[in-house]
Image (cartoon, rainbow, N blue to C red; front, side):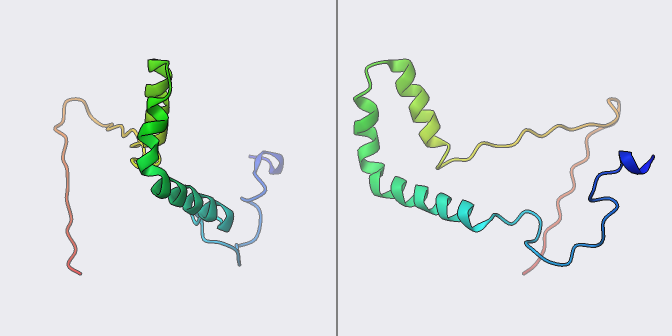
Length: 96
């Protein structure tokens, strides 16, 4: 692999500061909090607002879009391996 094929990160020095990977930035956290507050203050009105929509398809679409804020979508999980071997599931419990 030539130097031109490497990404900038691979050849750079070790990370020494900043956020830990996966930590949401401040703006994202504030926006999510604001949406949560709005939804909690207007939850009783949501049914009335959705009922005012004449088109049933649009009503259902908006209902499911709003529901995503309360019940997040599940990620798809794919199990791979030998088709002839049994699937083995291991559970580990930790005492706190």
